[in-house]
Image 1: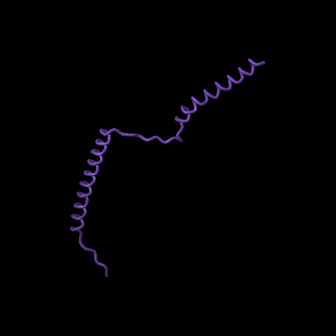
Image 2: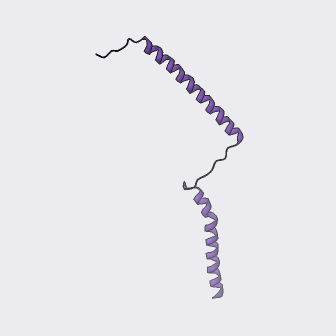
Length: 82
């Protein structure tokens, strides 16, 4: 009788330990956890360089568009309201 109680307790202990060990692994696969991605200095510098290139290209494109818009606007005849 004593051995039977010991086996049932040991089985319960092993079940609890197994559940505790694998619960972190299964919870990490769900989308409920937030992860902080730490980028290396090299990645940060490359991202900054890419951002600067994109920003510069956008500013140049906007300047070209403004120049074209004002050039076309100047050639149009004025509209007058009576």
